[in-house]
Amino acid sequence: MYDLLLSIHNLVRWFFLAAALYAIFKAVMGISSQGTFTKSDKTAGALLVADAHTMLL
Image (cartoon, rainbow, N blue to C red):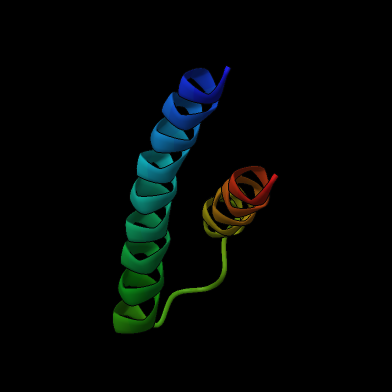
């Protein structure tokens, strides 16, 4: 059971890293182009927060 939970946590950790990089990329691109906050920006942030909450469980 422990090995299964450890493997799941490892996958979630990598997904969190990818989501964080994606959210940072979207933020930098938005700041540099001085664009408006779009639905895809909100989705990037929501994915990051959802994954962080899942990892803390």
